[in-house]
Image (cartoon, rainbow, N blue to C red; front, side, top):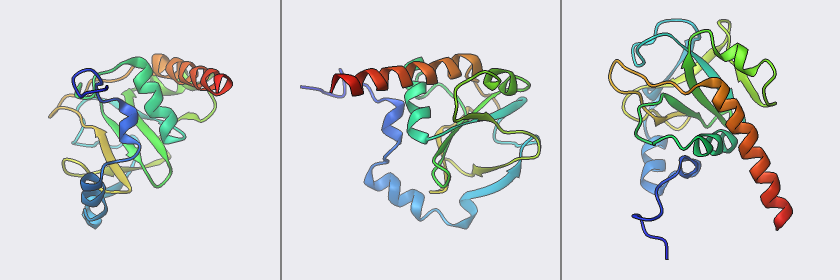
Length: 164
């Protein structure tokens, strides 16, 4: 029988928030998120970053599970529930190169794009923190490894579907 001790929480568990979390996100109010131009300063995350969008959201969460990153590692990751995308902030000038020959459904958001960003500790229903960076410091996911993990998660999903 699975217990919390031998069945650790996975990134994919953020796909369907539990009841209290869902209520909190739904009632967060209009100030819970804002629209920010990509490439502008954003105080919540220190350093220079670029957003990488993975669609659908579930696929991105499975890729983070494939990387076996700790949930509390301070990686800036946003769930955009409106577009069903996972937004992963990666080091500046790395996103476009990583997705040049990468998997379909993974794209770098460019300076002419806008990003819905969460405010406060969680954000709101439209955009919520899946993993919030530490104050003034962010640990970034390597975008090349992330794209490889998307492909690995897809291959695992296809294999599982064939076995059923």
